[in-house]
Image (cartoon, rainbow, N blue to C red; front, side, top):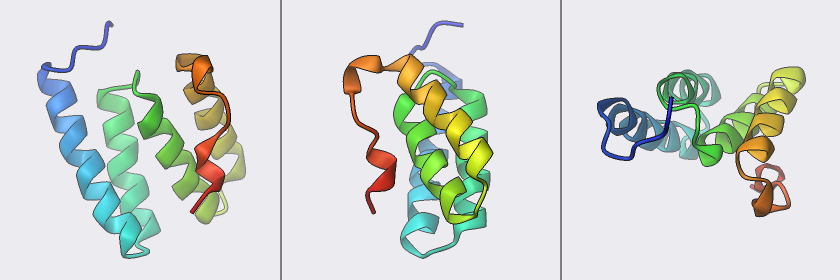
Length: 88
C-alpha cells in the first residue's frame, strides 16, 4: 500500500512513534520496542521508524531482528546513506 501522511494508520503510527520516544528517553526499551513495532506495522514505509526500532532492538540484544529492520530502512531510503541507529 502506498504511504499517505494523512491516512488514519499514519496518524496512529505518528502517535505511537511519539510515545516510543518518551519510553526511549526514559530507558524503557521494551515499551519503546512495543510502540515502535505497532507503528511499523501500521506504517511500514517510514524508514525513520525502522531505524529507531532497530536501535531499540540492539539495546535489547535482538541483533538479528535489528539487522532486518535496518535492511528494510535502507531499502526504503537508500539515498540516506549511513545508518544513524548506531548513534545515541
